[in-house]
Image (cartoon, rainbow, N blue to C red; front, side, top):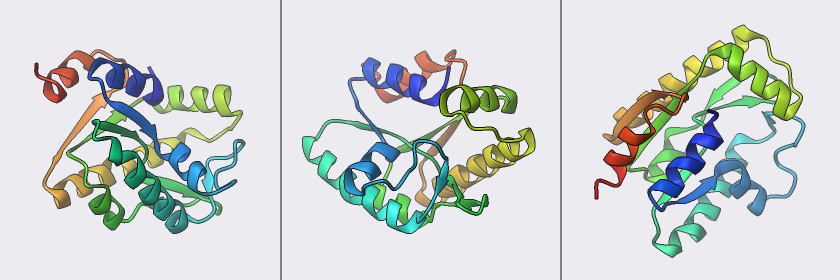
Length: 164
C-alpha cells in the first residue's frame, strides 16, 4: 500500500481531514510542482506556501493528517532536507513514516508518474527521509513511528490516534 492509500484509509478511519502538502502548495502557488517531475524549483517558497495554506485549513478545528515529505529532490537532483523551522510552524502532534522496499517505490513512480529513478537514489532518499523525520521528532519532542507500508499496522496506528 502506498503512502497516499495508507493516509486515505487512516484519515477515514479516525475522521481526520487528509491534506496533501503538494496540493496545498499548488493551491497557493501556480505551477510550482510539475505533474511530470518530482523535482522542486524553490523549496523555501513552496514551504511558505504550504504553511499559509495549512493555516487556512486549520480553521475547521478538525484533526488534520498531512501527507508530505521531510526531504525533497531539487531541480539539480540533490536530496535536500526540509528545514526544521517549517515543522516547528506546522506543529505536528506526531510523525508517521512509511517505509517501503526501493524496488516497489521505483515501480510505483514509474507507473504513476512515468519517472525512472535508480534504486540507489531511491534507497538513499528514503534513508535520508527517515533520518530527517527522526531528527525533527527529537527536536519537537514528539513520537516518530516508522512503519512498513503493507497496511498491517493500520489498526495499531488507529488505536493510538483515536483510542475511543
